[in-house]
Image (tube, rainbow, N blue to C red):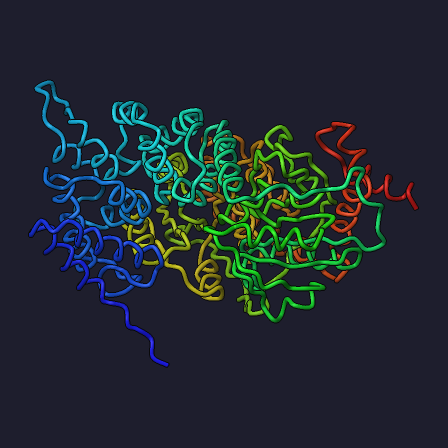
Length: 626
């Protein structure tokens, strides 16, 4: 069976450029969409490959960026609803094109679209504004432009803001200020229709809130949830018709696991594999996923695997299948990484609905009753909207079956100190980059930052180019796990990003003996890092509470080789696997205990109104019921 070969990127770029020159804008938009879809999917990149860097990649990106610039600046190009959707839907990929290009961003669009006002600024005609904002990156949004955006009609500002919040490379103060401001605008969109068109790009934006510095970053989820609920109701989806009072306690209740991202090699399984496996000891478990698929190696973890696939345009098929099992509990290992979990978290399918923090952030959904967290993960309970049920604090990670961990290498006196930043590009914030600049300034030896942004295609090319211009850095493309560990093993210090930390990366770094510098905070995604490193023999001053203290801690490791080496040796002497990895099949019994307590005592917990329930308290309740 033959498969249709994808048209080469250079061919499509040429077609786009030609169509714009001939003012065939409908054809140009079609080619632009196909290019951006290819870049977004990581199937092609500039310069002939998904990891190419250099003049050829820049030249190809510049041809495309110039064509898009010319189209947006052309008065004959009319921004229809369809073309506006094309720009906003693929906004983050388009912004990467401009980053890789010779333009180095989108600031020039203000000049080519607007008219000088004679006072050093620019004015815009009404029809030019959608074109301007469709083309601008969040990094180009000055306070004046942001104010102008805030005054646009809701049906214009909503898709733009969702596009801006989806961007994967924020590197300057404009971007962070714009993001913080946009996250306060929820009330502007209260009357938008609940439609798939409104919610098309909701996943990356919903998840993107977590990476902001602003304390109010999750509040916008109340508006997103309301729009999702409106859409579900328009599709005829209603809450399950649940008996009152709840059904009698069963010996083996039914628990449906809704996994948006999960397979044997994914970080989710590493974090939650033993925990999910433990559920089968007391519950009848049904596994459902975004794709309807499950690894063969994971099949023994569940009583049943349902192959129903989630379709955003027809969510009722998936939701109704969940309800058909008449579950006693619905459990989300994570919420926020895909549309499936966001939609499903806004409908009541079971009397009890529980989440863990696979994506470590609160939902603000009234339909999620509990968040199960490690007792040591909880920073400020008020950052979690759900009632918190605590499990014990102990090793619970699972190693990949294909992991081939090299012997740790501790460099005693390197000429240049290599500082590892194993973090998805969205975790690398403007404030974190400024702190890296301060680290460089405070260091008495040369430093080189090794970034692992887990990107390919235009994302990797854009992030690599920008970071290597800002800092003395090497940026590595997405690769297989063992190659990544090999690179990490060549580093001397591990930086956990902030405000959103590392978790899985810390496990990798500790196993290679790297001192981990981290910054704690109230959010789970900040407190979690200090919780992990506290298991090891590394000094308390490596866990910091401000960017300044963070930079000083890193610089101290750079400047004092003997100290750094001693800390690395101390970490390895702790035998990291015994501090991190679940050592036996019973290693997650606490998880099923907490889930059983939620099942047996749901009404009591709800009536009590307490924000946080300790593991000890839940254990006592179970013991009293025996």
